[in-house]
Amino acid sequence: MKLIKKFFACLLILTSIMSLGITVSAEEDWERLLGTVVDGSVLTNESESTGTAREAISRGYYLSNGSSYISNEGNNIVYVSGTTTCHRTADEIRTDVFLQRLVNGNWITVAYHHQTDYNTYYSHNGFEVVVTHGYFYRTVTNHVAIKGDTVENLSSETDGLYI
Image 1 (tube, helix red, strand yellow):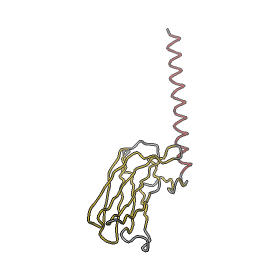
Image 2 (image 1 turned 60 degrees about the vertical axis):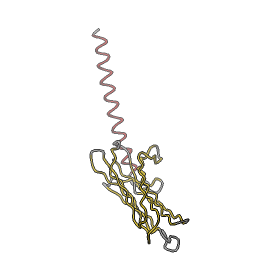
Image 3 (image 1 turned 135 degrees about the horizontal axis):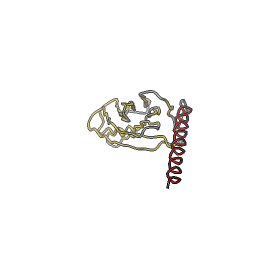
Image 4 (image 1 turned 180 degrees about the horizontal axis):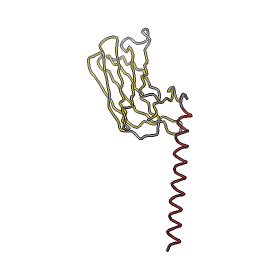
């Protein structure tokens, strides 16, 4: 019986030491990724990021620009938002905000919110999300303006923040 207890105690100690080594390795991995560009987003440890897309005036009769935003609010909470602005009033303005997490080199959508505003030139969509610590996160926003049969769209994205 004493031999079994000693065995499990040694196993527990060995497992604890191994998991500590894995944690340190994971910490080093994210730091080595800082400054890397993945699908247009720079991986950073900043507390916030804004990305802007502008439609060329000659191409966008209605749609002017769009922006995405992400901020680390602490306690594994991020605030994400998107804003769409038009040159003139449109029938519909859509601002679709996607929160994405970097997993194995690919951005995976983990939260999404759709906003449609009518007969205006401006739309804003923002929300908070509780996220899993230890990943890079970014915001991607699709911006759409509709007037009659005319549909104009563009997208914007932020840099990736380590949370």
